[in-house]
Length: 281
Ligand SMILES: Nc1ncnc2c1ncn2[C@@H]1O[C@H](COP(=O)(O)OP(=O)(O)OP(=O)(O)O)[C@@H](O)[C@H]1O
Ligand SMILES: O=P(O)(O)OC[C@H]1O[C@H](OP(=O)(O)OP(=O)(O)O)[C@H](O)[C@@H]1O
Ligand SMILES: [Mg+2]
Image (cartoon, rainbow, N blue to C red; front, side, top):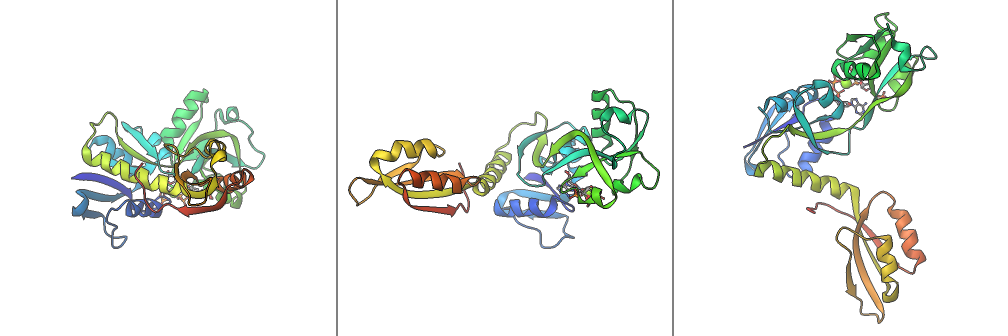
């Protein structure tokens, strides 16, 4: 049985469960269910804290897991990214009281609160900055106000949490993170893990692409294909109407409206866009 780790709480939990459900895996009935045996797919799903997932996968007790890239790096566990999943996007950044600090070098000799000590230590040593790291469990933004730290290093998405306590980011982002599928470094490939990866890729592609159908005069087809080349080239079928063809092609969801405009400009008509429910490319 394939053993899969899924975040049981927090920012990634719901989106990760939705993705696995779309990929055909059995969802859990309620949030208290910590292990789900999915007989039909030869898979066991373990619901764990995202921070612990890299540790389990690194130890080899679980085969594959979903966690944040920042947590993967922070753990220092011997795991590697199989693929990004397109949700849970955030940056990991330094922040301090508005106007107090402008660059990383301002941190020399100061205290920085974070729940990502592994990630921050590595960054500080790469930057050659000698600062004291104060490890906290969460809500680190409050540490400055309470006099425990001079700066914080934390996850920033919208920036609302920082603004609410009068903090401002400074320096370049330490890293860009999103949810990722992980496995143990140099773990042998297994058929069941490969099947999971194919299914999850199918969900990511179905979200990232749309299906576009249009009709166009046969002599403009090369121009149209140059605009929308598709995965392995579009399907071109003859139309009953003399001199016209029907074209079907997968295009990125992002920018599909501009692509419709461009196709219209070169004479395409009856341009239809439909969502892809599932795919295996
Ligand atoms: N507001 C957010 N937007 C996007 N991603 C986020 C956000 N907060 C956290 N994350 C990401 O989600 C992952 C897990 O973080 P999460 O906050 O869920 O765990 P935690 O801090 O250990 O748990 P909790 O916040 O429930 O105590 C991390 O990779 C993090 O980058
Ligand atoms: O930029 P924002 O959109 O405000 O999001 C970032 C906040 O979200 C997370 O907090 P979480 O709710 O996970 O609490 P925690 O700090 O206790 O982990 C993170 O730690 C930041 O505090
Ligand atoms: Mg959190």
